[in-house]
Image (cartoon, rainbow, N blue to C red):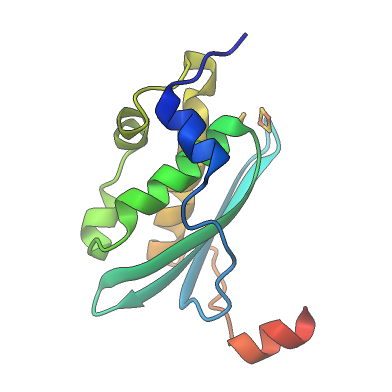
Length: 134
Ligand code: FES
Ligand code: FES
């Protein structure tokens, strides 16, 4: 049985910043083919600072909690500082993760880096098109 810290359970039960952001100006995706978990991160960047960050995640308890914590750590940070957020930072902020779940912390951090580096991201073309498509 997997035992999670209280912090992990808190973020799993009430994930922070979990929503789709139609007017984001960057997005990054990361998926882990070994377990099928995947995450998309949305950023609103202004003056090199992450003003808003949100995500949609498909995955296990740990991937939801780590995505939530990644967003909390990245919000308000400069792009350079956000790039320096590591998996270990996320795990530490959650008061630890079971060893078999440590890899889940890679989802949020990698998607965030992809968004910042504009690697494999499409810039969303606007809220209107998105709303129409939906
Ligand atoms: Fe990855 Fe549950 S979805 S283990
Ligand atoms: Fe693979 Fe959670 S089990 S990311």
